[in-house]
Image 1 (cartoon, one colour):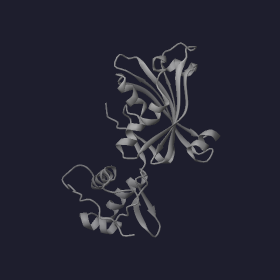
Image 2 (spheres, helix red, strand yellow):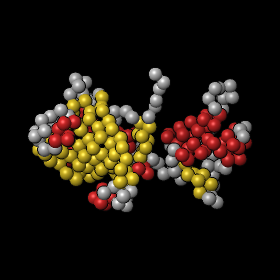
Image 3 (cartoon, helix red, strand yellow):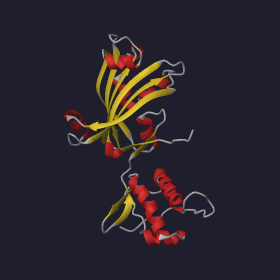
Image 4 (cartoon, helix red, strand yellow):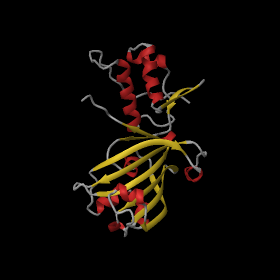
Amino acid sequence: MYAMPVPAMRIDRTSPIPLYFQVTAQLEAAIDSGDLAPGDRLPNEIDLADSLGLSRPTMRRALEELVGKGLLVRKRGYGTEVANTQVHRRVELTSLYDDLDAAGQNPTTEVLKLDPARVNAVAAGAIGADPASPLVYVERLRYADGRPLALMHNWLPSPYADVSKEQLAGDGLYRILRSRGVQPQVAKQRITARSANQREARLLKIRRGQPLIAMQRTAYDADGQAIEFGDHVYRAEGYAIEVTVFDR
């Protein structure tokens, strides 16, 4: 397979931004936009460095940054290519369905369970309800381009008991809430890692004990009213969470 020409890049030598980082940022943008697609093979380090007037160590560091992010992979005797697309989810109040749809990864959903009156003390505590009050429970398996990516458990207050399986299979939960005039505005979120149990491994088509990213989230509307509690797990090799940090 021939190497793909990379999109034109501009290097500003007067900028305080390191040269390797300028290359990394522009290649990452090309991958995010689809200008470089999964499986595309990049020219070798020497050719890339020469085309931009950079040293080989600078180019090597730029590529290693993207390998470390899971955006590029190196294959012995073959070269460097764009990795299979990983979901890069920024810490913003969006749903997985929205993120996959925006990334062009064809989200589909299998609704495994829908119970309009299930009692769960943990979920009730998260949304500020009485521990004995029935909540709407939803369990879904979310696919990206036909591959299982996430197993999602959600609890909603009782006013949403009329949500149907057809709605949940055809759209994201936050889109359904917005269609009812409910706008998620802020969320409290906890992200951890753990091993897959037998059922999770079967549904996500991975080995038992394989690492998962776990996330618990309580979302609130503009009035501070809790509108849902979610407890989700994601295949670790296909999912990433990006955080921007600031000096305060």
